[in-house]
Amino acid sequence: MGERFDGRLRAVSPFAWPGLLSRISEIDEFKGWWLGRFRTAPATLGRLVKKVVVQSANSSIRVEWSGVPRHPSGSRPAPKPSTPGELRPSPAAAYAQLLKEVFDGYRGMPLSAELVLRLHANLMGHSSKGAAQGGAWRAGPDRSLLFPLRAVESITLRPSEPEKIPSEMEALIRWANARLGSREFHPLMVTAGFLLEFLAIRPFAEGNGRMSRLLTNLLLLRRGYAYMPYASLEKAVEERKAEYYLALRKSQSSMCLQRPDMTPWLTAFLDALRAQARELRTFLEGTPPESRLSGNQAAVMGLFERHGVVTNRLVAGTLNLPRETSKQVLNRLVALNLLERIGAGRATRYRRAD
Image (cartoon, rainbow, N blue to C red; front, side, top):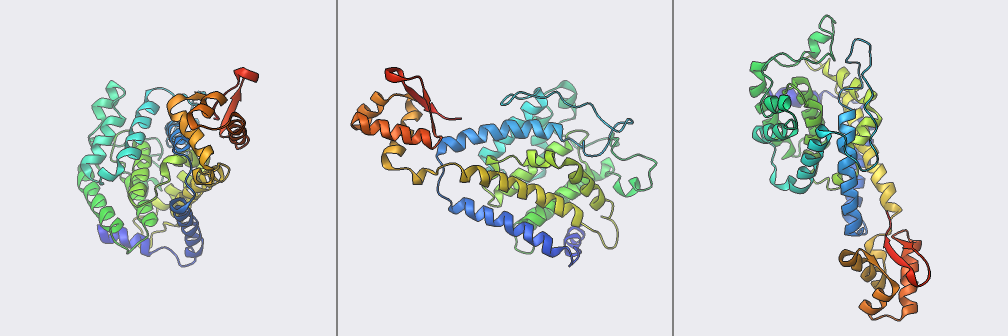
């Protein structure tokens, strides 16, 4: 089976490679920029992770196979909008918890069938119905209405039979680990190939899309794409969900042909990663890095870790600075949008800017 997976990557048309390599180069250039950048304040990054976890959880619920009609009417009810920073009901909360677990502990989470089953059990544990299905491979026919049963193309898109799922998942995981640990294929290509097959197998009764996005974050973090927690990949997918899932469907329909065509899926997958990297770079380039702050400015920012809100008097006394100097430092940090001024005159206080 590994040879079949390799064959799909080797069968990519030579005419497609310039576009694919351009996307891979941009993503990897950002990866290198991230590792060698001026360091942004840890507190800024901490707040960014919290924002991304909530944003990703809500996006991952909204994007669930909604790029292609699932209902007879050709549409599905739009989810109720959530207020900024607020998680929607428990499926999103479960996803957020697992995503944070991946962000924090990916180094100790090698890809395995046991890990995939454990993540799925936790993902589906928010309801009694989900808990009954969670942590086990699909035992019955796939109930998705994504592929009409009488459509001609649905034959090539039909998910794996339940009895084949354990062996197929073991083979897929074994292939991904072997290829991600070698230099034969680029890790972005291997990850895309893994996801294409995972979503074709549809190993779970529910939650396959959410699991695919969790595993994407895990695999890329383990391959050195350390910026994943700071911009939402799920949001990038949601913003282009129709193109994303139509490309997936098109590539899946050719998987068993003599000359499979992964180009639509590879392009859509890399486009989402490129959009994620661009969004994060735009944000960071507008945020003064920690190493560009003066000694006094960095020391003032450090006071917020202990006090939350500071005053000119507190800064001058703690850092042994003249009151006028500490005021100048605080005003500069306000101008850099790192601090926010509250009140006026003797009652003036400063807190971190959002």
